[in-house]
Amino acid sequence: MDEKIIQCLNELIALDLACAAAYEVARGVCKDEEIQGKFAEFREDHLRHVAELGEHVRRAGVEPPSALDTKGVIIQGFTTLASQEDRTAVLAMRGNEELSNNAYASALQAGVPEELRSLIAANFEDERRHMSWIRGAVLLRGWDVEQPELRELSAEARGTRRAA
Image 1 (cartoon, rainbow, N blue to C red):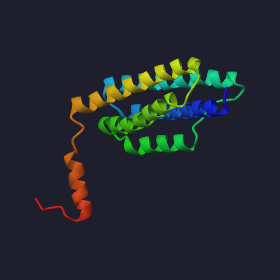
Image 2 (cartoon, rainbow, N blue to C red; image 1 turned 30 degrees about the horizontal axis):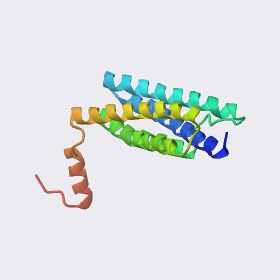
Image 3 (cartoon, rainbow, N blue to C red; image 1 turned 135 degrees about the vertical axis):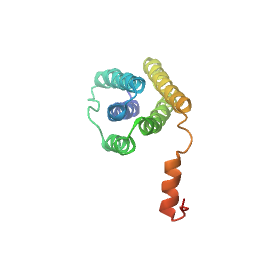
């Protein structure tokens, strides 16, 4: 297997490891059982991607990533800082899923061999399903609108808060 393809797979593996870690963090702060369940399901999808892609990398004689890299630590750290409750956890994971969706879309454009293309396409469909559920959760719960407390905090920080 071409070195460029191995690098592409290892980058996907590293991102899937980061997303799995981020889902664990986000799930831990959520109270809503539906969100917890979906986050656990999505985490397992990312871990499956790591295992499946890792098999191909090993067959090429290279050991795939098995721990978070610097970007993974940053993604996990961002998720930890951003996830304080259900709403902020879902919004944090929306950003993480945008990264993974873009990475899988790019990988499909990288000229991967046919035997890998179907696996990457299937993983990409998982990522699209994750993003679709997250977008639906945001819309369903009305979380796409800026929260009043954020507007107040922003006004206070700018020194423009009006007295009540």
